[in-house]
Image (cartoon, rainbow, N blue to C red):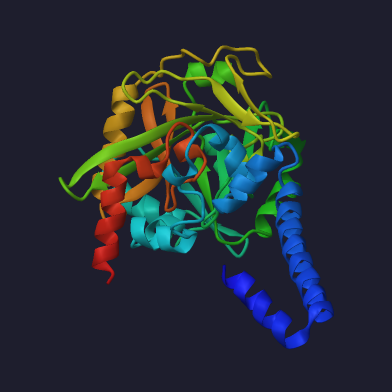
Length: 371
């Protein structure tokens, strides 16, 4: 109505010709803006029908999350999707002291005081030199470490998503890095180029995970928190990652791996999920590369896994919502690390964060505390 009144006023002042020109320009600008928005979405989501591209854009969701979370069949407002609250606000609300988790060495030093179910750090790399502990008192070579431990992981102190992760091992006198045979001197030279890395023990995974996919350590991402109403730890969701030829040596979804939700009551795996190169969301009963069944597999030590995650949440209660990475070994679960921002995809494969009253209370409580 305001636009019509404005057009009448403009017509009375300028006449028919100028009014027609102004109207044409207005309509052209609107069409151009809409086309730009559509093009912006289409270039990132070619497999989505146009109506879903526009719906994703409306909710501020990128195509990757829209497809992985299958939001064409659900209400996006239930999910944390980088629109409301914004990522920075969400981080502030769910993790008030993020530095503890940003630094894997700091996390390890604090956590090992409360549980022995944590991977051990055998070396710390500063300026290409490996030290046996954070005090830097004693140096050691990567060859000496391999002679003692046979297999290790080399990873950045502050990084995630499986990036810059190296698996090294010594087997039958040969040395391998990420599965490829290398000369010992070359490995030493490689380590000398690193800075701010840790060298961590290799966790032998349980036979169920080894059978499903043997070329990566296949881990759980479990979203755990502390309910401010009762001050009790809880588990929101659990997802089991499995590697692939594309993702190895990591099992990360973002590197091309697979993800299977876990039934929290029974510890039973559900179907594998993956978005392929054509942006199509696919589910699988069996792992596509090994043909080993995943759906229906009951995880061993599931009760112990839940106890460990709740213990970690209590120990790090100042971090009210954390994504815990856990590996199940032949003797039980071991925590690898905590992630300060629970993933918007892995943590919500079956339901959105904003469907859970406990998470709503965390957001409300921490918002009030920061005002």
